[in-house]
Length: 236
Image (cartoon, rainbow, N blue to C red; front, side, top):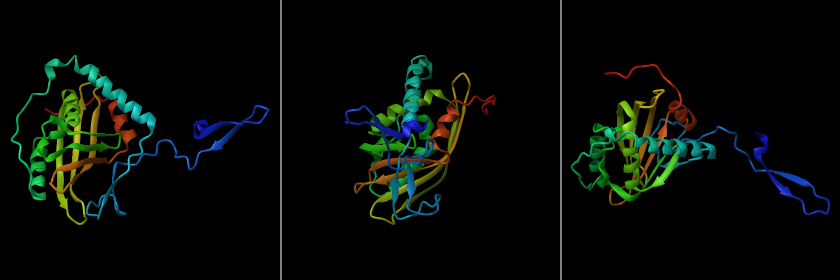
């Protein structure tokens, strides 16, 4: 494995030789930074002055995530009977941070993580969505991704533990802490259980321009849950 930490460079001398140059500060394999960090020594303190996104997921893990996504996409064709039921919700525009917080609370009551039902009107069209494994732009793509995953959830739940606004910096944030638990409808019936938080960054028009998750487990551990079989039965 150490060979991957070096970059070969061919010498131009008459006699063919090979030189190796050590890449600057190689990062040990498996070190993963969560996507959202507060400028604070306490990782659970969400009242800091600013939030910063640091997504440094290993490339191989990104490939695994892409592969799992494609697998679910293919399997979704065989689950036509489990399509997400289109449910209309009242869309409200927000004119204050309190409006956004209230609408988000309603979305958590609708368990939007596991139902795919969320208030898209409070998101900017090109909103950035990120977690420790992936980053992309666009609320329509986010909606499609949710609808892709929902049919595979078995006895899902998303519990909102806390939600609050942060007005202590130039940028306005809403921060939510939650707990996700669901089985997946795969032959080995894996259990996904993650505590996490989501930072919702707002622009001057009170639109969410960034939806950034951080998890209590590393990206590698989260992906590992998908491939871990369980014999537990979902709660009725």
